[in-house]
Amino acid sequence: MERFSYEWVKFNKIVPDYEIQFLKWIHIFKPEDFKDKRILDAGCGMGRNSYWPLLYGAKEVVAFDHDHNIVNVARKNLSNFKNVKIYYQSIYRIIYKDYFDIAFSIGVIHHLQYPQKAITNLINSVKKNGTVLIWVYDKEGSKRIVEIVNFLRYFTSRLPLQIVDVLSYLITVFLWVYLKIIMQTHPYFQQISNFNFWHLRSIVFDQLIPKIANYWSREEVLALFKDKRLKNIKIFKVNNNSWTVTAQKK
Ligand SMILES: C[S@@+](CC[C@H](N)C(=O)[O-])C[C@H]1O[C@@H](n2cnc3c(N)ncnc32)[C@H](O)[C@@H]1O
Image 1 (tube, rainbow, N blue to C red):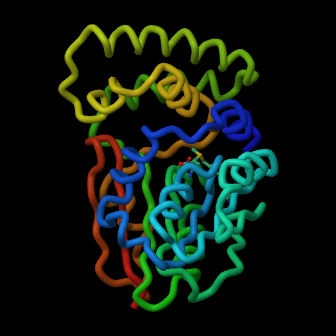
Image 2 (cartoon, rainbow, N blue to C red):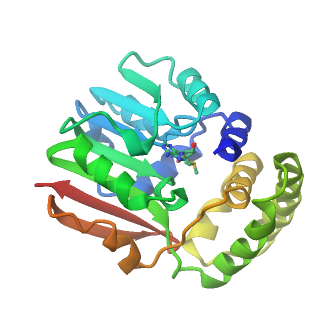
């Protein structure tokens, strides 16, 4: 996981674009739904997805990540808030039971070796009628792009991070020019064409580094939610290249 550490220590600032992304990823919720709620952000990275619920008036946010350097960055980014606890912890060992109103894990589950175990722990952590939400990659929306990224990642996930850093810069230059010149029709490309160069670069880098990156079909994602304790399971496509799944605990 030290590869994510390099990413979030380098791309460590919370920028307004992140709110647009966050609201898309969690789109069954509106900002006011977080007010006075207890929130879990599992695999929080540098804290960008905890930041918005805290601004929206959450009662308490617990955020954790399984990387010490990343936890330090999240602590710094969220230091203005009193009602946040940030831990070094694994999603496989969540200690909270029946506690949260909303437990989300954004961009994490598809990188795990045991995704089912992680979902079970998220379900354990929410109280009755609490919601579990995950956002993961979709393999159907942009098959060609997934093939290209998977091909590149085969090499880049094995290369030293400093080299991937330089490569990601070069790829981002091409992507940046392409997005500025060609009118985009795919919703995801439309969205990222408005992002600044730095943000685009962090996305490219994020795609190139992980050893595990699963792109799932609707059925594969829903299979992770076959738990008898759940009701109201909903799945949404986001940007035609990813899934948000939500479910409530009975
Ligand atoms: C792509 S990043 C997403 C971070 C954050 N959710 C976001 O959207 O900015 C994946 C994160 O999952 C974390 N992670 C990986 N395995 C984990 C585990 N077993 N428990 C908790 N976090 C983990 C990584 O350290 C990394 O910060």
